[in-house]
Image 1 (cartoon, rainbow, N blue to C red):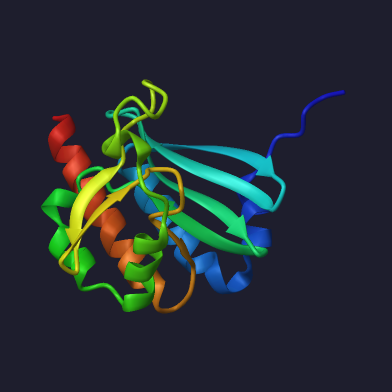
Image 2: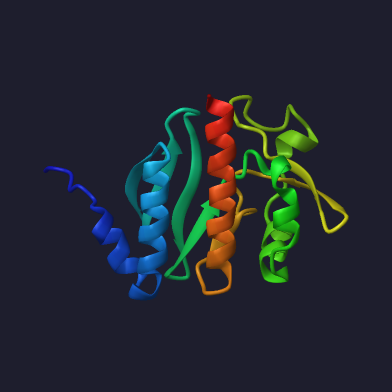
Length: 165
């Protein structure tokens, strides 16, 4: 039996027409800035990941929770734009704070040695040590989050491009 190829339009169809413009705009931006996509099926929908070719690291991943699309961002260079994140809506900052802590930052021997360490930063006067993978930077797509997600992706790509040179 042959494996069916997932098309980007399949992902768009289940993400919903209300998110189509945002998703297409971010998709085009990331592709123009050196990213490639990988798509796969998951229990709750599709997973679409963007990898920055020059740094060989993930930039963002779309996932589905409660049948709604979410964008997980990987702000590897957040230290250069942390002030922008501190201006985000409380709902988004709360999502970061509620995300999983990075075991490797807390105790370097408690996680797989191949695991990339998470993010250590100050948000609203509190130290955060958040995991790259446990929903710390995963946000539902809605009218409030989309402008901030666009901003952080542009800031992150700018930093990755500068550091890859």
